[in-house]
Image (cartoon, rainbow, N blue to C red):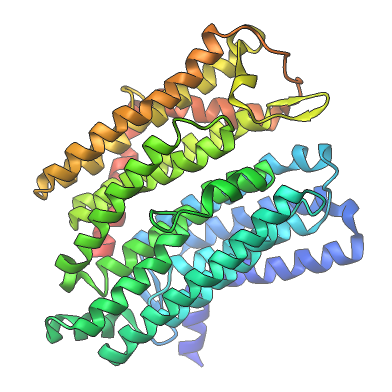
Length: 480
């Protein structure tokens, strides 16, 4: 009984989220769609409570339920980033849902269920828990992608994501079954011991390939990126912002945990896969975005390229590389959320617009918004002294120190190509003929998010020391 109580205390953040989600669901059922605003506020309160519970426990590594669940410094940092992304997505959605007549109480409830799955993914220390968390997240995301049910594009996006997501789950399950078959265990610790003592094993290698294929889908890495542009374009903009932030962070945390913890002994094998996926993602994301006219599709290819840059740090296979990935994730969250606030502001009396040329002359019609978007675009391009430069600097520094200088050279050259389409947006804003002005309906909360993100990216050098220290501690916890 005492052991069960200890386990429940360790898994308290997920328990609070799960119970909170069910409470919010019942509240919405009895109160109706008019309770959407109340549920948004309650969801933010719930995320705050969960954040406190994440950091209220002991900082050292703790295991629960026979080692299938882990809580340590790495999970604490990644969970805080995911909760931040989810909370910002809820705030960003409120005005949009009211304006587009999508006020249904299910939206914040689905966000909470998806976040519960992400939290479980981050703390997974067993293949079964990994899959449960992944599917809990995915089932909610399928519905969110098709949330605007009267829109053909949104319905199509949800259907594509569901079909391809089911395929990726099958690949992941097949890989997990092979790993279980050849290692005799599903727990990460036992798998790690089996891998370390078993040497080269073709069955484990094949299982690793299938497992990584399933995980690559979740982080939208090439060649499993095909869903990303269509889902980003078709889903409602707040949903797209949520997709680009929280789930991607949770999936990347899961990739780091799986490869560094149980499979580190065969790093030589998975490094080859990560190097290929990294180069392919960077090149496709950098070149495919050049011809895009829809800003949401452009951000989809941008996210693919950013995933490739993150994987450069993972390919290094060192603590320094993992630290670089965590720093990149913290910066990427701010860059992405800020950019999607600007996309939410692209609204005229006839409705939302998404064409890049609709930003023409924005520096004259909305100078403050243009200045914030300029900072974010320069940061995404990796231009110093913006935060995006430091994100790329730390992952590529780790790659060079690990001897992967060809990968670093390819990535940096592709970054120069990718900078073109970010700077193109800036040129359209500054030099283009002023288009019809957007509505002045951002609201106080979105202005705070936008200019907070812009300030964070502009003055990151002032906050760099604590971010680097926290990322270093999280990486150290993963390697212990």
